[in-house]
View 1: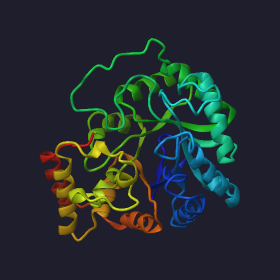
View 2: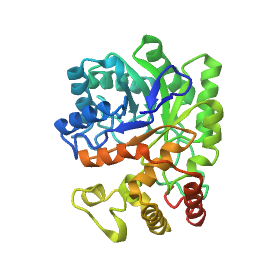
View 3: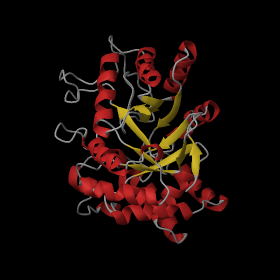
View 4: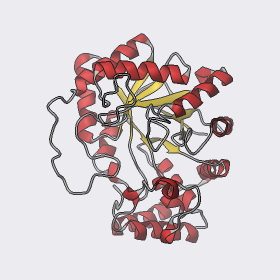
Amino acid sequence: MERRRLGRTDLHVSAICLGTMTWGEQNTEAEGHEQLDHAFARGINFLDTAEMYAIPPKPETQGRTEEIIGTWLKKRAKRDDVIVATKIAGRSDMNWMRDAKEPARLTKAHVDEAVSKSLKRLQTDYIDLYQVHWPERRVPTFGSNSMVWRDSGRDADETPIADTLAALDVHVRAGRIRHVGLSNETSWGVMKWLAASDAAGQARVQSIQNAYSLVNRTFEVNLAETCLREEVGLLAYSPLAQGYLTGKYRDGALPAGARKTLFNRLQRYEKPGSQEAIAAYCDLAAELGLTPTALALAFVTSRPFVTSNIIGATSMAQLEENLATLDVKITPEIEARIDAIHLRWTNPCP
């Protein structure tokens, strides 16, 4: 398993990161432990979670994914060879994560409570990478953004980035957090975080976790240059477009047990042009003698700005298929075919 440097840190993470958001909802604790055992036996050393998980978010399962990881870490008893990333929720109406039953924010009080609770659930003394799940300010996220700019305004009580960074830096200096990362962020946001760090001599952002796939290459516009030049690594999430790029939802199919079938939450992958693009990539994979999964994951892993490709699975068969894509090479000829499809159906699922 290839290891890649995380930002400017001394951490080298596996090119594939194990995503965990289904554990505690679609997967049991035993299934989560089985996935972890297998992934780490195959060379993965990096796993990603969040205080909000399992998905879909709800009070009954919030924090359960971290708890499942925590029991595995305790059983494993080798904490130092595991790189754990988790996230604090950005501003939202979800009021079940804080003791005061107030909506999530990125203030110092919320940061302090979130860090403490994640450490307890994970049964660890430190978090390797602590990420801001989405910004406090109004930014289109999770498929709500179109390719047309609309000013979403500002909240009068918006927590400044410098204030959130200062709160996180306290935990970095105390050793509870090793490094800081972002998620669902923009180029402007990345540069503001970096400027705040430089100005105050505080923790530097080392990574950004944004959606990136064959049907959503918006990261390549501005963010790729920003992150390459500033050495902020992309942790790419939804590389399979939440399952659409496997072809399992093609022609309106709804497989039993699939996320779309269970929760009907994947509308960001059903926008105009999306089904034509997905079909074209699936057909290209077949022509190349690959599965659609292999083509989609290998493409993401091969990008120069990607530090780690976050895969997720609800079955061991899916996990093994995802890991097998490490042997697939995206040649210049294959890349040209991919780009031809991309130019015809450009980012239908931003």
